[in-house]
Image 1 (cartoon, rainbow, N blue to C red):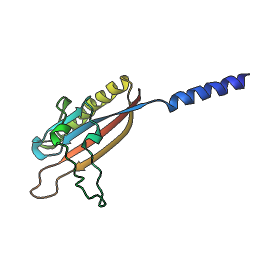
Image 2 (image 1 turned 90 degrees about the horizontal axis):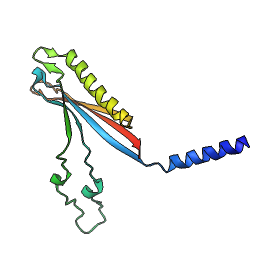
Image 3 (image 1 turned 30 degrees about the vertical axis):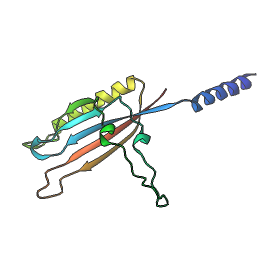
Image 4 (image 1 turned 180 degrees about the horizontal axis):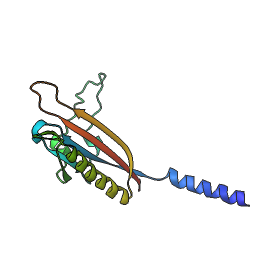
Length: 151
């Protein structure tokens, strides 16, 4: 009898899990690596949604008609978003480790808030566009934090 109850309970839980809808949310940090602290660093998030299909077209060499994407870039823009200031990696004296620690504290606070709201940190990905040598004083360090939760 116990085995039947356990099997039945597992079957019910697996059915619930299969039908669970997962929602994803992306938070992006952009940290400036421009010398002398001239850049801007931010943590960006939004609750506005966009359907990628509204800005997507199917293209093929087999099509006779023009399959160009005729959507307008302005329609993609999000005007309401949360922008949290972060500190730049550099100041006039060079790299500023205190700023990195401060950014870590702010980003950790955002992650902890998201987790308390039922989100789970699923993936983290980052990239750097850095100084390419003489004459290129531009650069950013970008990190995307991808959260998920069951609806």
